[in-house]
Image (cartoon, rainbow, N blue to C red; front, side):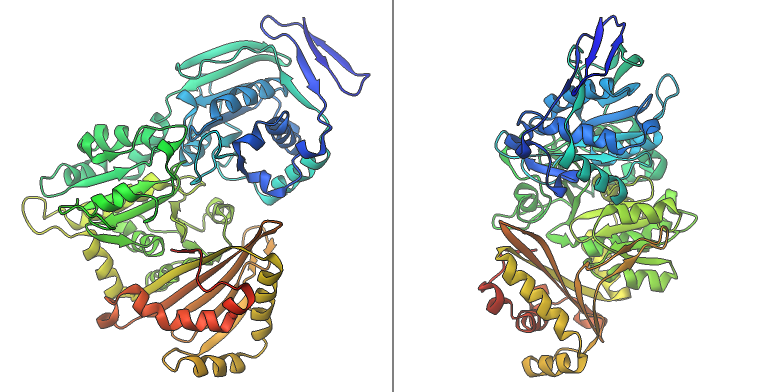
Length: 601
């Protein structure tokens, strides 16, 4: 007998079943166990928080309750993630809750592994053996944050377009977490062996319930092969004149690296670093930047102990493989330059874009390098708030093909998430195209050559980001309020700037960035404070995390240089005048007491 015991009574439902025994409705009454923080609608918290009784369950049920009935009852859901600690337990819990809520089938990547971009691809592209298509997905990841028993875990929900849930849904989830008193779970459902590919069949409260464990990489690889010319890339990678290195930082990208780079494209297996996914990411921080990808940075001839003979090309991924870092021999490519260079070369180098780009977009803090490309190529251009969902809206409306953000995220309209491996394949495609006549012994066009040629054509956007973490929240708000107040008189701002440095251009305009979505008309206000200079340079100030543990002030400094004779300067040297202006104009030390940022990117 199959029973649902509801709380409070009196409702009681009884179902006949072969396999499930005891679906129980639980009451969660402890205030600290309801999900009373909006951040959990894209939840990233410590494992010990998620493992509290009912904590994960409440989020999952709040999500089911936020969705319309037709998106839950009889639906197909994807449940997988980056393989971090607690993922396997969480998958079993979500499977049981899906069954109890009337979901028809759950798809799980083998061993619970699917990169965030692969989840989006599976939702959009995969067709089950019975013809089913996915209606949404729970993605288990805390992105580029560390994993392990004392580290981070996270969960988010993606919609049927493969993209993150919009604010209308996340707001409902948040409200539900504040009032939830019950959740459904099929306690009698046995754990599913997610290490073995195959379909497990059960009888659930609404009829048959299936769990389909499938190969994690096949659907994603198929999609990549439909976008890129793998034969062209393979000629490059297997050339004796080219060398390659890829670092997964022990994240889920490792589940794809061997299949794509070694088996499909012919790279040596020795070119793969840290490509075995681990629950704790090997004790490292899976964030693909110059600070944390130390082994790759050294291999590429950079850092404190550089290799003497670095490869021609190197790249890294974060924990869930949606971010990327691209390096040439002794050369770092900024994320802002990367998306601009991909956009500038996409039509010639990538078959998927051979008929042209629909448009391009970047997040507001990302440098304006993409803007210059868009203007030169007469492309639609969009500047959006931080958050991939804004790109997704544009893509669903057919307005955007390539997009990116300064925090190492790049992507296109093939899915609705940023995609680290896609970005690497895009760069390899550009290199293959530029070198199609050089692989038999001519001088290779290098990553550095491509970037410098781009600067010569479009100008260079010198760029840096200063993060001031755990600043007193009150002081941070006062700093931001003062910056807004200054914007009331641009002439006074320019007088102040001239008094600090005479070698900096005047401010042309200043505002608080506000975005009206051209697709749905929604308005996003207070997205950051901007000072836009007459020479194309910018200062941007953003505030985040104004809770009890302090705030983070992010300062973005961008110096545009059109003179090709000046695009080879040291970045910090070129930015020094604007850095001084930014710190003095904002009175950073006066308001925060900080003489230096916590992190410089």
